[in-house]
Image (cartoon, rainbow, N blue to C red; front, side, top):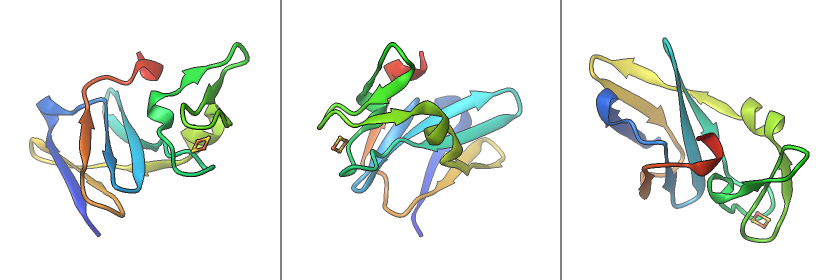
Amino acid sequence: MPIVKFKFEDLPAGFSTPSGFYAISQKPGKITLFDMTCPHRGGPLTHGFYTSDGRIVCPWHGTRCNREKIERRTQPAVRIGDCVLFFTEQPLEKIFVTIPLFE
Ligand code: FES
């Protein structure tokens, strides 16, 4: 299982692997990884937009996803010293400096 590793002070807003899109949430004392991979065909919900009723629209084919469902698809992070580790199915591909949905 690949490990995606960042220095804590350099944590990005998210990242992608060849098969998934992820957003990183930082709250005091807790770092969470959200699986933002569209359930339709694996599109980037990280780059979607909100509807007026609060659902996220995938930019690839327009599937609408409930934010609550996405917020349940979380994975823990492991912090070791000044590093944060995430366990993913594929290795790191791209880093997202910002994710507008979470701003
Ligand atoms: S991959 Fe998201 S709508 Fe098709």
